[in-house]
Length: 417
Image (cartoon, rainbow, N blue to C red; front, side):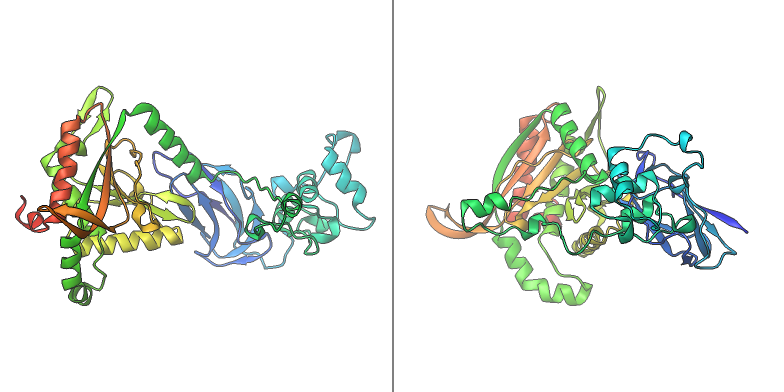
């Protein structure tokens, strides 16, 4: 027998732990080299763990939901094993000691399952018994993969509840026809926060508690940008293979303003102000796992086409959970576009250690006054939150006005005015 360890991949310096998600293979099943065995979630990304060698998965050292660290052994592969052979039991699935007196006292859930297990059915480990009781499963509902058919913790976790009694989910709730119907069908579901969600919550609280956040607002007439986009969007897409959106203009306008007012692109480090001589713009992106902010590196050196391509790439990677740690690390200024969801106005929260963030909203036609005349214009409200500890109101307001001017006269971006 030749055993190869499956280990947690290297994590970034800022990530100490990760959470095991769902094993895609069971002990005794054949695996191919580089086949994805499990995904582990850090507070930034989801990492795939491939099989280092081909063979048979002989043991699961760590189970779904366990907390792990870099280089920790989570499973073992027998490179000379055959699929279907009896797997070595993991620590979580170890059979109970032969001496009854040495067994720990069972919980009420364990006793209930044991009492309900018919004679002749497979035994279950204490951990598996508890999980089965919580799921409403009997021993006959679960196929054991341990020694002598013993039901392991992993078997219980992966088993499904009986189809005869499906649990009502929040998605199944309809508007009640009567108060009594609503009372009889009030579902409630408790789920733990993902590492990403917990980390986002932690950082947002940190931002509000450590920054002196103030928000300044302005409105921008988007007609010049919309006219420019309407004139060239077909040629642009044909030439560059990507659609010309509005975010690239917002990024360019932000960089234009940050060059004029460098303190808005700075950050606080203790009692020091760190001025950044580069422009790494974070783009807030919604994903199935929560909010992520991938970084456009050296945005001042990117063309409109480059920016649009990177934003499209970030959006797809966020949807697929493929963003890397490097793509989510750093940043000197962020842009959040709530307008894509219909937001008209908001006060964005700074993404630490940055000192400012731009909030972009939905563009709507509004009646405005130009040269004493009431006209209809596509207007967008901009909101910039900033850390008042280092950014005075003057710099913040003028930086937002510079963004407004660049959007209302895109030629400024070419002439650097």
